[in-house]
Image 1 (tube, rainbow, N blue to C red):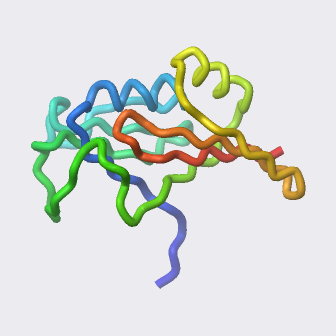
Image 2 (image 1 turned 180 degrees about the vertical axis):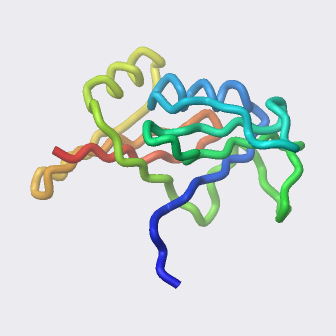
Length: 132
């Protein structure tokens, strides 16, 4: 089997609306209903500009095909971070500043890459990559 691309990341939260709003406002992801039988109170899916649902945000009580213990707001265990390729570096910095968010910038000029590291409302570490 050959991996074609990362499909999506799933986040379990006790802050569903706040988490969806965070991703919509910071990264211009489009918030949509998850497919039935899930309800808007159970899950929100966040779509990129190409129409791909890259984040599945589920409430703690949302039914799962494979259930395991999760603790919303805890660090992400063995997953260190989620990396997203982005555009508009200065706009994202301005949005983070407007939120009063904690973030770090890393400049890898040798490969034409600037990165922003920040956490979402559930303490999921994001690596936002901006290539020149």
